[in-house]
Image (cartoon, rainbow, N blue to C red):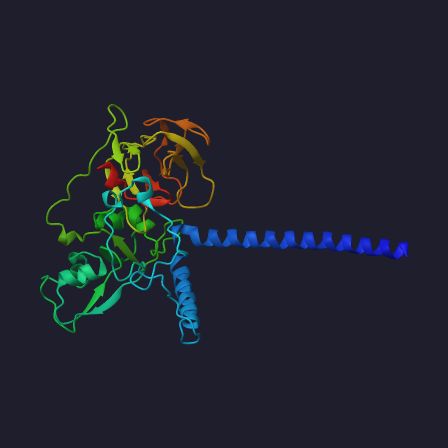
Length: 372
């Protein structure tokens, strides 16, 4: 009897050890799968996004059909949409700037539209009765000139019902790569920065930046040579030495220009959560406000390259990317104007510049709305 109980005890002990080890292996495998998935989605700063978006949309449509009453008995929206019943207490607000006194209107001009989903391709639109170039441009969130350039139009009034128009996903131009082209030559041709072409998530530019002949590129904010009747105004030049002007932001942020630059080569956009300040002289980069270093180095394979992230302790964080040298370490306290690194071209970059971001509680804000 004692032998039987001893054997039974040993069996249970073995089963517990076996099950614990198996559970640990499964958890490790799931963690590895999650990390690999995140790496694939972030690789090349959005190259895989269109596939992810398409799969996500298909999944949402499937869920909607199953739970909408077509195949099920319940509606997908129940007392949670504005104007339908009472507010749903289960809805969690992830970003409440008013709780800390932050006024979003002072930072970003939000505008409600029918759809905020990013579009990756050029679509065709049929002109309807009552349409004008301005109403079509406003409908798709692009400039009137973008429509004119894409459709070889000489007059902004030369549209009529039934006419088919090519509509680009963003303001700018579309360009088909020719033999001998590279990012720099294309950007120069269309009077814009090459970094913006590289960063646009639906331009399939390889890491070595070698373009394929016949490849279609979207050139954000590009202007055709024949349309440049007058030169663009020269960009603001800032200085990282001497008197430092401080700019106040709602919620307690006080920021300064982090470096000197010759031009802003890429502006803030939904596909580019910061601004790029270019300067071939590779000047020093200063902390825009005082805080604690939370990232210093190149911790992953993402396109930021060498970077520094400063946590300012008030909900704000600033990021300084593509640095050639880093002069601070994680955990170090820095003051406003203290040099944290040197401008460079590491990571997914086309030239010497600083990619600068300001985030409030994880939400990317347009630095120009604060610094100007």
